[in-house]
Image (cartoon, rainbow, N blue to C red; front, side, top):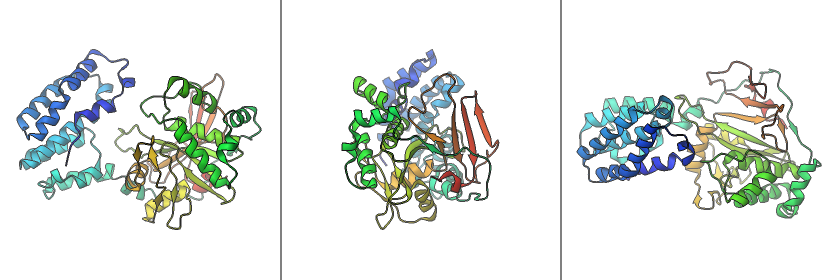
Length: 408
């Protein structure tokens, strides 16, 4: 299977991660820039001697990294070892291949789905030690398997939680947003579902997604859209969801941002995804709306589904249909196999949203407090405490009861 080696690492570590580099970090970056492509050449030529020489150079630099940077860059090392696994496998050196496979997993390689499809590993796939390592990998990297084990909640959980609130559309800031961007015209005159979709498409096309950079300090729709236009920049998934959320509120449509988290057993996955849960009065239900991918999800009848319903259908292997125009930045079309069964299966393990959905809700300000409610499956290990507070500014209330989490 064709490999994308060290070039991936350069993309993974954006300039944002390199701003305050130490000398060891600079040295390893220079090595990647100068010799990164040599890994690819050695792999394609099946030159294991040249590949190992490069690995030895890399390991010397890697060992000199500070502990925290070493952890951040474990992705690099795990991929280098993984591709050496494949090289040894192709050459028929089974013992070395399995040894490197173990080193790759120990370094943090976690792409279980890729391992199952990678034909480079066919020579070792039936080996006892490979099977044992692969079974261990399944527990941390088979995201649908992990999600299916998180299917139990507690409908009797009655821990006290704040009530969900949605700011009224007559708020002056929301009225300014609605008027300033002519959202009535953008939403159109159709049903509330069509308005919801029209606003989704508008935000998706207006501001590009850029997950490698943070969002502006002022986090309301008016400010973020203007900053993006002025600086020719994008927003990460949270920023896009915040913008779309305020657009819905300004139109009198109930909406929340929902942070979707992985279980992250290994404590190496810093990725999560933020989407919108939007209430349709005509359908009397919440809808899955994702501005990053211009995505919504349907069942076999073409009926739009909620986040709760998508999660349940993933667990129970029921039909899911992704809208055909789902895409990333109008460049990369999305498939349900990747978007739903891989990426979102990983990130639907636990969910969190603010108790109050309002304009400018996540802009930090002295004296400002914000409460979130987190829905945890019973499978999750870290259930306690019931309430977590951070410096008096953020409070996270926990619940195992989806009924109270999805009330409107």
